[in-house]
Image (cartoon, rainbow, N blue to C red; front, side, top):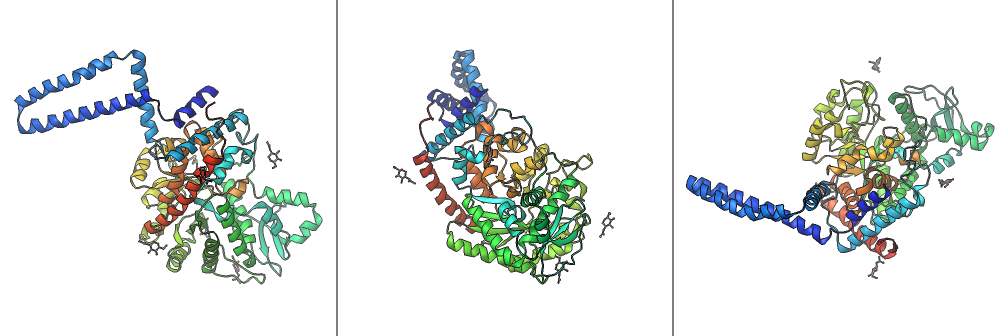
Length: 566
Ligand SMILES: *[C@@H]1O[C@H](CO)[C@@H](O)[C@H](O)[C@H]1NC(C)=O
Ligand SMILES: *[C@@H]1O[C@H](CO)[C@@H](O)[C@H](O)[C@H]1NC(C)=O
Ligand SMILES: *[C@@H]1O[C@H](CO)[C@@H](O)[C@H](O)[C@H]1NC(C)=O
Ligand SMILES: *[C@@H]1O[C@H](CO)[C@@H](O)[C@H](O)[C@H]1NC(C)=O
Ligand SMILES: *[C@@H]1O[C@H](CO)[C@@H](O)[C@H](O)[C@H]1NC(C)=O
């Protein structure tokens, strides 16, 4: 097993041996000769007639004779090897990144990277106990300790096109925030936290939705409970339970609570801007140069319960991001995918769409599009195509829907929303892990150049897949389908903003045939399939390419060469 794997890696890293290349050329020649014969045949047949046709058949026969004898001179082994190589080459070309050109320096970086990966796999026994308890494969090591992780972290990974603002509040900051004055917490019957609010007075905010709780002052909690216990309980409400959830409804409720808790803290007016800045900094230091942020644009409030407007929330992101770009010139910036959460009756849909129009009107260069957050509970919500307002919207608002993430038990609506997202003209589709089961939709999306956003760690932690090697994205990549890597709610499972998802995509999902070509394609796709217009894209790609070239050069200079020829 180990041997096969390392051989696979070898063939992807080194250029094909001379013999292989000759065979490859032969095949091409043969093909072009056949084509030439065919076109000659067609032309003459048309103009001259049957006599000439007979003549030509003779010529074709003579022409093909030497080829025939050459083939028959091959031994059975050679013939077999030739056929085999043909399939290998075809699939390699088809695969995502298969046509990616690499400079000589990048080729060198590629072999170093593959060597690092191989050593990592051997040292850390990455594939041992793969099928043990969740989370398998990551449970016995901290991936951030590996050399491969370090390489991927420093690598300029381009844009991040699927991430939610509520998934970007670091746990340590969150815990610090809960120690501030005037913080209230809404506690349910099981002593669990449902909501936070900074307020000078008792907050008269009734629970809205599928939960019940009572407000009390946070200070009281901290007084009566040992600190570690409090922190553990807080963490509990913000991570995914390892033993899983009974249903998608229960999981969605948990995710909604998570978003509510985070928003209660960060939309306190004095905190929001700091939060945005820290988030941008975290993206930037993780090798991300451009972000399309999904946010419901929560309304900011102050200690006296005075609310601001959605435009003020947006304005804060725009201005903080502009300041950030002034300091970090190679950061391209942030665009917004306005993604309010969907309720069962879509009772607020008109309000949401009015907000989208308002945002686009005021911030045409910041507003990228519209999405509805279902928290993975698509099966229990009406189909997107049933929302009549969406059908009537003109081309003025672009859609970036989540669709095809759920496993609906109801066979009358398999993989809800995927088809609707296609028909509604979604520009990309989020977390669409069910796509490979729909070859017609796949074909259409490929023609329309609609990419799918894949967030492998989210799929794992939200318990859609246990084994990364069986992840549907592996098929999409093998078939050359356009995908981009996202991270969804990375701090929810204590991951980096993007590197961890790159790592599991590279090591887990594509395993044997991942290489620098693929990684470069991931990065380029994040611009190609972004909402950036052509002018913007050129600027962004130029910024990325500059960092990329520096990284390649640095990586080749600094990574050890010792193991490449082992
Ligand atoms: C991973 O790191 C944490 C702290 O950073 C440590 O407690 C834990 O033991 C490490 N796990 C492994 C398997 O090395
Ligand atoms: C502020 O908004 C919240 C909902 O986010 C609402 O419950 C509250 O009544 C609003 N306060 C004012 C003064 O409008
Ligand atoms: C939403 O739909 C449910 C089920 O159809 C219904 O019971 C409920 O009254 C509706 N709520 C609103 C606010 O329309
Ligand atoms: C592209 O976006 C920029 C702003 O980011 C804008 O100034 C420019 O007009 C846009 N170009 C096109 C062709 O829409
Ligand atoms: C890497 O080494 C080469 C040759 O020694 C040098 O020209 C290049 O500047 C170095 N690159 C970096 C980023 O240090």
